Length: 209
Image (tube, rainbow, N blue to C red):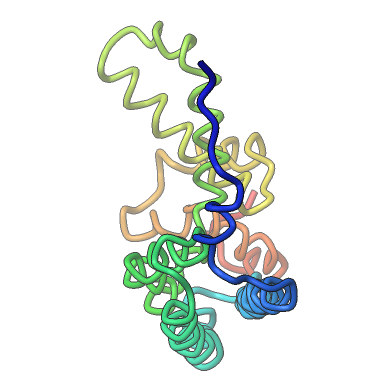
């Protein structure tokens, strides 16, 4: 025996969804998606403005421009969430974003925190690729040293610094460096001092080559 279902019953029990209704729903979803993307793009445009700014300047820029946009985005997400079915994929994405809102807003209260984790995720790939080599660091102290070097080289990559040049200058100057000046030798600060090198040459204690 073959089991079959009645197409007529299926049609009778199906909701009356007209083509124009489907089109209207799709237009609404595309509108939500498009507006959300544009609002996020605006946040990234502000980040590009503050790329070369100091931590303090970047924080002030974010407080003045990013924080209001972020608040508007949150209000929009709450509105869109009410317009969508709870199980809709976009509604679930909105709920996830709202549930992580405190973490998503951290960059507006700390100028040193990036807007996303892209850099960290890329650097994690380097750790994975180096996993086999890390098996032969020798001991815990060697592992700690390798980790410090990995952090320094990753930070150099982030700030577009030549790691070899930076580490060469660091190791030459480190033995005679006062503890009070250690922060001047962090990669980001070293880059700033290198940019001001003509002025720094007048001060022998500054981090120069």
